[in-house]
Structures are given as C-alpha cells and as structure tokens.
Image (cartoon, rainbow, N blue to C red; front, side):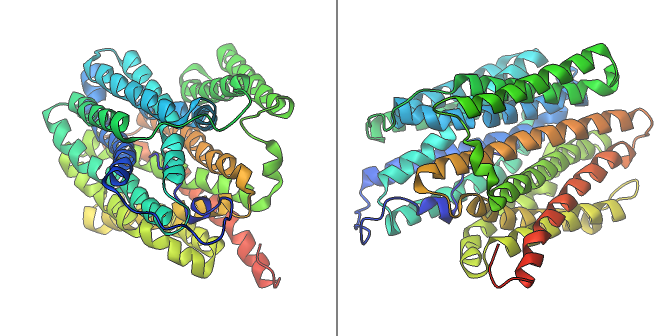
Length: 483
C-alpha cells in the first residue's frame, strides 16, 4: 500500500521565522486541501481494490500466481523506482504543473487498465500508474507544506491529510469486494471519474507556482535504479521455473547487479544525485529504512497470499474476503492519528519495536493455529488485529525516525528515501514469496499447504525487523543517552 510521509518530524521542519503566522482557512484553502486529500485517498483506494480483484483477474485472463504478483509489483516498482525523481522534478518544473500532469496520466492508465484483455498490457498500465503516483505523492505533500503556514495551520492540514491514505485503503477493501462481484474491471474504471473530478478541481484551485530549485535531473540514477530493481524482481520470480543455474537466470543476476552498481557509482559522481549516499552513515536512518522493508514487505506479501487463499482455495466471495481483512485497515485508519502523541512521549525506538513485535506475533499466531483450514474467529481475525495495530504503530514511527535530526535541506531526501525503501523492499519480498508459493503449489492439495512457505518467509522478515529494533533499546539500557 502507498502512503505519503505525513509524520510530525517532516511536517514541522522549515526555516524558523518566529511565532507561526495565523492563517485564515478560506473556502479556496479548504478546496486545495480537499484536492490533495482526494488524490491520496484515491491512491490508497486503488491499491486495495485491485488487491481484492486479483483472483478474478487471474481467472478471466488466465494469469498464474507469478503473473498476478506483477500486477502488484508493477505498481510498487514504478512508484518506488521514480519517487525520488518525482520530488526533484516538482522542484525543477513547478509543483502544480507536475501534480496535474501526473494525475491526468493516472486517470488515463486507469481507463486503459479497465479495458484491456491482455495480462501483459494490464501489468504495463499498473507500472504507468505507479510512475504517476511517484510524481503525485511527493508533489501533493510539497503543495500542502507550501500552501499552509508552518505551525497550527500546517499541522491541522497534515492531520487531515494523513487520515485519507489509510481510510482510502480501508474503503478500497469494501468497495473492491462490491465492485469485483460485478466484474474486476470496475476496480480499474471507478477511479477514472474520481481522478478527473480531482484534476478539474486542481486546475481551478491549486495556486500557480514557480520552480523552486536550480540544477538538473539524475536521469541515469533513476534509470539504473528502476531497471536494476525490475530485473532483480523478475529474476527472483522466474528462477524457480527456469532454474537458478540457467544461463538466462545467471545473466539476469549479472545485469541487475551491474545496473545497481551503476546506480551507486552515479550517485557518487553526479552533481544532483537522487540519493546522497552519505546520509546512510546515520544509524537511525539505516534502521528506519530496513524497518520499513520489514513492515511493508511482510504486510503486502501476507495480504497477497490471503487474497488468493481465501478466494481461490476456500472459495470466499470477494466481499466476504474483503470484510475478513478489513479489521487491519480500520485499525490503521483510526489508530494512526494518535501515534504522533505517543512518539512525543516515548520516542520512536520503543514504538517501532512494539510494531515489529505485533507484526511478528500476528504471523506466528497464524502459522500456529491455521492448520489445513484456518478458522476466522480463532485465526484470521486475531492475526489481522495484530497486523493492523503493528502497522499503525510502525508506519508513522518509522517515518519520524527516518527524518529525525536531518537538516531542513535534506528532509525531502530522507522522506523519499524511506518511502522508496519500503516500496522496493516490498517488491523484492513479494517476489520471493511468490516464488515459494508457486513452488509449494506443485506438491500441495487444496488447502493452506502451498502458502505455508510464504508465510514462513514473511514471519522471518518481521522477526528480523524485531531483532533490528531491539538493538537501540538494549543500548538505551546501558547508556544515559538515547540512540
């Protein structure tokens, strides 16, 4: 799922100019906020609706589990690969222009996705939508922080803004279940009129702005990062069928490694890099980026498996499946707004540890109680409550830690970096999970057995995140200073 950074740490940074100026909330100001919230809501809505529809898409278009994961990963990689470039482009060309153009692309890609009859073309539209989100997400946050004055007005706007991503995701589960009952294409077509309404409103309400940065694009960095990650994911997904020692597999690994190495070299050479690699020398930043991989990677992969299992194996209707997963989304939507107060009181390390603990317990509980046919009240519901609570605690806390103590001039970099890590990391975890599920399906009957290896993996990913965040807590016990 895609959520723009709205943590307090990134919201309040900026040049200090004394007491925050009072700002009158005019109808136009409310209108701008409504447009930005609508786009964030639409992003969350789209991700969850399509997730619910995956089994129906696979059945109608004849797509395997391996192909279905590309409908998810195409979006995730498009978003994660160009997110940093998206924010930079808005600085160079103007926020309003970039935001509106990307929103128009999102609408067109949604329309095409709902009309195609070819699986490959469908995956392409998802990748294009991910590219569009890579420009709308950072630009929307930038428009908000430059439209609303620092202080109470901006904090109020950010509080409203942050709720819409999670609530859009939760709403998408229900709406996706309803729409898929009529046909999976409606999950692609429904966002089209909503995006067009937001586009027209944005043209009328969002103030014009001038480019705020000098310099150029790091196109080489963007191409090498996105190309390397796409090829790495493709290799992991295709290797079980082709063979890990197959020449094509080995060649793909080599090319992916060269592209990613080229990205690192590029970032050390160009004048305006996507990522200043020196920022990764800060321990808390590294932990935050690894934690978001554990959080997103395990959560997205588990939901992917549950979507297929509940519909394809247990033959639940799309709506029944959506309602089964809904408790997690509701906890994220209603719990996230309160996490900021807990961060102020306890700091980020204890909350991230609690998040990883809750996620790990959720997966372990599912494994321990699922058997051949998991019972909803005893297995699925407790699991979704633990996962939803863990995600609510973890997301905001990780975002705050990822930007804490970073100079104002690099707040955008730190925020974009952690979001990129989450999206790309989730794509890699999902690719491995898909390979394990595809392998397990060959020797399993019509029960949970084929998904067991995948759940083992996401459990391990969450436990690694748990251990990683135990380190700063142990250091705190032996040192008067916080890590």
